[in-house]
Image 1 (cartoon, rainbow, N blue to C red):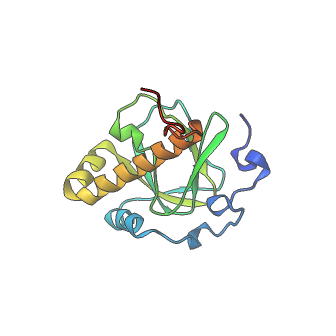
Image 2: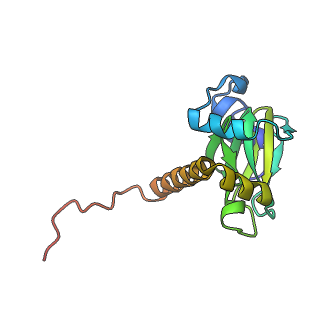
Length: 163
């Protein structure tokens, strides 16, 4: 799917996919607040609504933490997730060292972000193990969501198996 990401599925940018431009009013989960606190003094990057952060296939170099606003993750024309304050995107670049981005990410509303390169990521993991745990939780949640999306039937046998 091509074109302006702000008009995907006929919706305009807003907070977490609601069409509301007040993304800064989205509450921050306590575990996400911890990530924001760790990065409180880091330089910030500003993105305007609709601006692309990175494109599927781009070479990765950093992950990003949302300080305010919302990002949208899209791949192959499918919208996967909206990410608000304290959320992260691009973490796979630092965890698995894959040579290309797996999705396109753009600002769903005006955003403030912090870029975390590989050296800073390693330092955060060493100095704040709860940061590493939070990244693993996010990866696990996203994997589970993908699993549900592509395997609608449960793996549980509905009838007893014959011996």
